[in-house]
Image 1 (cartoon, rainbow, N blue to C red):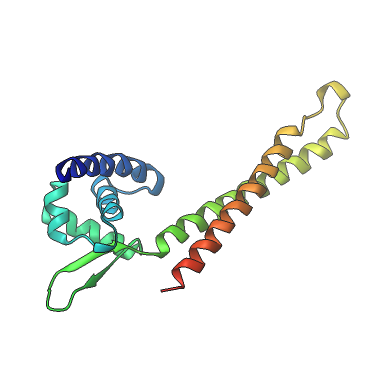
Image 2 (image 1 turned 90 degrees about the horizontal axis):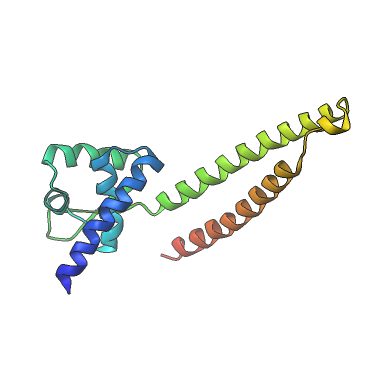
Length: 165
């Protein structure tokens, strides 16, 4: 059973890595390091774990691990009597992603509000059959408001749960 779980983890590390490459603009190995750490959980991943399980060189893992720490995506802890560092996902990483998403949605909303305002004013000077249709902008702004409200609730829940430590 353990071997099957390792295979599934390796496949998911690859799949999640590809996603993170494009979403977070990470280098391929960097995305796989982050994926591996995410899927390892609270027990943490050592440098040696990352090198052997990702089949990457020590220098490559070291470079990308340092970059992920600089980005505040990962942090480490140590264990008494053990000289190894155990890398885990920074708790704030999820909040950073949520905040980035909310900011992106707010920018889109403002842009659509400006476009809609322009079209409303332009419609005053246009013939009936050439007027802009505003339904899309109205629906999209409504969606952005609802999505932002929903993810803001998630953000509040995350903050409440992480402050209970």
